[in-house]
Length: 248
Length: 248
Image 1 (cartoon, helix red, strand yellow):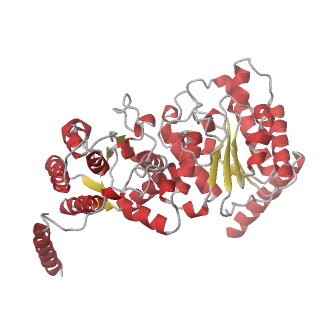
Image 2: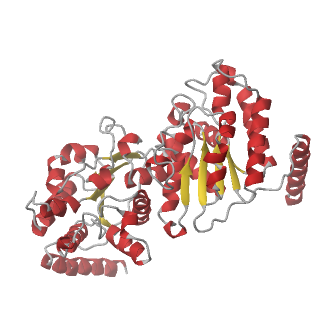
Image 3: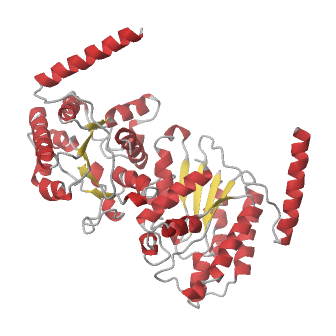
């Protein structure tokens, strides 16, 4: 039994490796959880789901409550800043509402590389499809994956020691999220996952987590009334999952 | 054994009763941590430290992010709402800036008893001395203790099953907090502790916690620039201590 399970696991891993190589990726080693040092910077990047009405004026100050927004970055920080204050961790939120991958490229030096994060968390992808469905953007799954890959290459070159955390883009099947989003949205989730694997990033399975919560009897609307922007309860769940995956 | 334990408990209660009567209180049995049931209400009461700019319009809705304010009640809720969503816990914040004990009496029916909390957390006492130091109020340590005691009697009568959580009033020695506040502030902390013991409440030792953090090398300003209103880091620490004491 055990041996079979192991062989099956090996087969899965090696076929994963083949798939990864075919997809042009450079490694399939499991991503390591970060070991934080005193004064380390933890940076959250993304779109409105990360932004959550953060105060721009105070964004230069680490651990500024208003500058953390009111979503999962705030709750991750609140779970760590108290007990671990002797660590002097520095949290920043630089998510920006409406952003797609190309927007991140444009502001990557000032809003990411210059901050030299020890841990860099990115959640991006919903606007890349949403704006397309609205006819305001013509990006494809391929351009999303290539742009995301480029962004992480740029990051790895500048910050080889940074722990990358890629969050799975997610939606609920309600509100603004229509059937026309599928299967393209799933393809984009898979693209994000491939990019994460290629760059040895930790993967936070938000869609999987919400799918499980809904399968257990909650409504999609409980987690995001418009299908895209998480509720308070959803942000709480995201923060817990993030900390579980990242191990801090 | 059981009989002995009971007698011992009686003895403990009666000797506790003597000590308590000497101190003017009625019981000294240790407070029990709450065991939550599905749908239980958790209510935070207090002054501006609890209020933290909560949205009044949405206060009727449990677990409303804006209605939770941006302080320790939000962080306690965020730590529990995600993972425990199947519990359907209902969090409310009804702290009100500027409040002293007499203000709580006035709004206790609508802002506490009617909500039938399974867990009721109260943090009150800083304005009771601050406003006095400013010459705007003439309350004494005795009137603070009697008023607080009355409030908890009223609560116990209406809600005998509610778990009471009394948070230690605290200040940092900086900002608005001057030497003239002492030793009266310490006497008020002791009064709050006696009231908590008398009513079998859990005691959250915030002053002790901050004193330890400062003894360990942090500045008072790190936790409250004006000596009274906690920083983001302080609210995070408070939420963690609260959860540790209350055990949820």
